[in-house]
Length: 235
Image 1 (cartoon, rainbow, N blue to C red):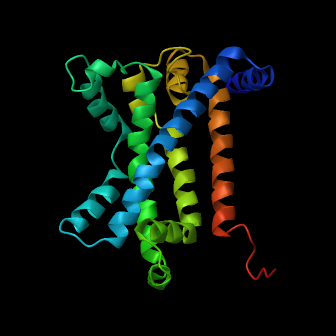
Image 2: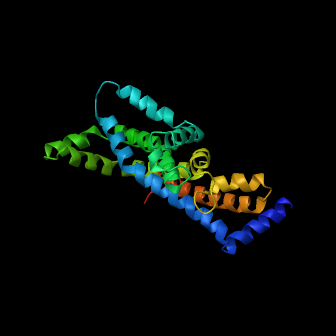
């Protein structure tokens, strides 16, 4: 089958509503969104606390959070696999080769992204904002909510980038999920499998979905950052 024929068949699969194809897409979106949701609150709070607190080891935490951004997802998958295996500490959960395991892996991948982006956004915020809130009688948590509301666009950018990272990763999902059809087979693991089998049509179809999602996510990020406006634009 030529590339042209495979591409044509890929569009046919997408437009015909192929059940197997759309189930893979659904599993990917479900596990990625749930993993991101699981990571959001603790990671954003951690990023805020690291940015606003002064304590011994703070620089080490910042370094670790930033270094984790470059950590290969397959390594995260290996560590999680060892924890979830029968001999592992988390073995009794029986999450290995299940959607719960994939979701846990996606959450671990998203956490450093959310921490690093939130940390950067809070550090860039005007310090007088927190001081004003304290002067007006706000308690510790009210101050945090006020600051996070002020830097909400940075936090939203973190969520968009984090979602893109977990959706496009393959190493952790493959190791922890096992690429089980209808259960843990995600877009990226399916592309790897179908391509190795010579089934390029489905791989191309799933690749088109990933590209489309990447374009939508980046467009949303540009709009948040204001980059979509032409130079010299004034409303």
